[in-house]
Length: 508
View 1 (cartoon, helix red, strand yellow):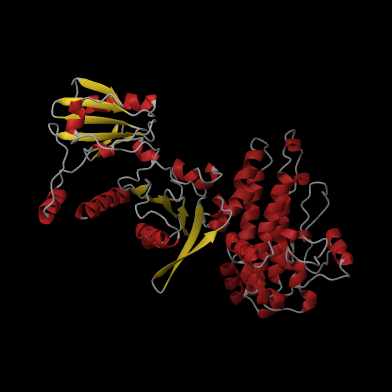
View 2 (spheres, rainbow, N blue to C red):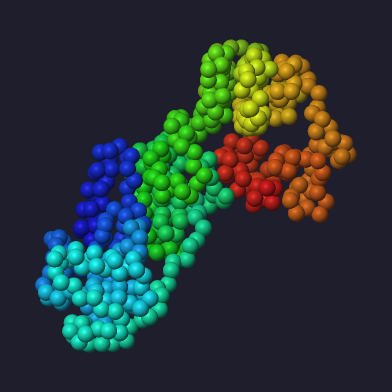
């Protein structure tokens, strides 16, 4: 146990000296993952040890020292057939340790035997010869197939006994699971993220990925330093929790992974996009960069139309318009009667955004026709902004109902087939969207509906609505009854948490 603590301490010191870039892992004997086995060719695990901790433990407990010796009797089991799973392990030197499905190497003094099981593979037989050469270079090796063993072979194993001829059971593959966690009264509580993707790895969070064969503790760049230092202990608490409730092995490999330094054996569980790891900032800033910055920049290179500069201006205007801290400072510096400046500022920001996204305001280039995904990109941008607008509404000073202009995704016109569309300025009222009129006409003029009609399994479902946003058609009071929070509070939560609550309420 002392050796384990010392090994972890040394590994942590090296990890800290490299600023958390490497993967820090803890692996128990018998649970070596393929990427670890591949580092050792051949990988030979022998009994005993030479550390002072092992020697001290043997002496204190009065145990026999079984440390491998080049002149003693040793039986070595050959596992696997490739460089990522071929593992050689010393086992008890008795005949019941043999198996017809594998190969073995027997060392008896100066004699070396390779024992070939009847159902072993050709690759295993080759590895057995390599291991024999590794243990005793240049020694003469006697090869014997199962059923043709000499008396000297059985004598070294203490006599012939029955052994197994069945294949070893394979571990059952299970679906990976992604979790968020929290501590309540010192007890770890986990919440699963269903249908997870790379977007669920939020830079402000610490997440746990459980593949049942391995456990990863993923740390975002914006996580507090203290949380990063205790991430390994958190992972161990999760393993202890999963041992009791999920049947996880207590010796499962455990890794600590930092954002931007994810190894290939972690990324393989996601549809990974490497460009996301080079973006800095919080989750919202990263989303804006992906929607308005990096993806658009690739399409505007060489056009000479000032697109990046224009987008930068639009983003600066958006940041000023929707940043609560800047609004608070402005509201304290001006009279209360000027509370209508917020919508004007937002209108200016949206106008800048519309200008930067609307291709009709720019000279058409030969490449413009090939960018068919631009409309859907703008639609995604507008959907992301609607959440900001909804959350921002709770911080504005109250005004008369006649002065309120409710902003919804349908009010933004960024379709490239409508070059004359403009963002409505303050005081103007926009005409209802055609789809909204059709929905209202189909449902007797109603715009909000009961929970029983909006659920996916309703016997009297509502027609003509956006079925991906069923919750938006609930009245404010019924919304709070179903979700336990107001609409503003609901849309301020991370997207995965919204989807999880919508699933539970059958509004997904």
